Image 1 (tube, one colour):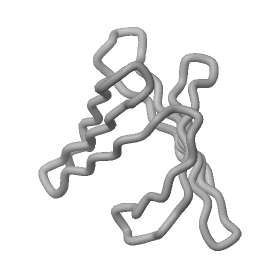
Image 2 (cartoon, rainbow, N blue to C red):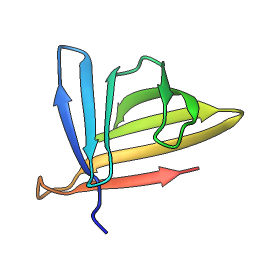
Image 3 (tube, helix red, strand yellow):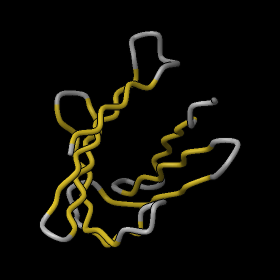
Image 4 (tube, helix red, strand yellow):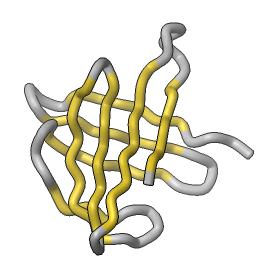
Length: 88
């Protein structure tokens, strides 16, 4: 199974685009750091999301229906590997 390939691209001074590509699906999220926004996840959940930078990691928090998910993304030292941690 192929892991999704995430690409981060800074669009403007504060706007960021996160593009995640796999052989099955491509997902694009545009956001501004530290600003909550409405997001429909790939599995159809309607969430409020916010992205922040914490200790060199891009941290995404999603909340919906009284639940919360945290996703941490960090580029490894080799510059080619993304480490992704998901906590419910």
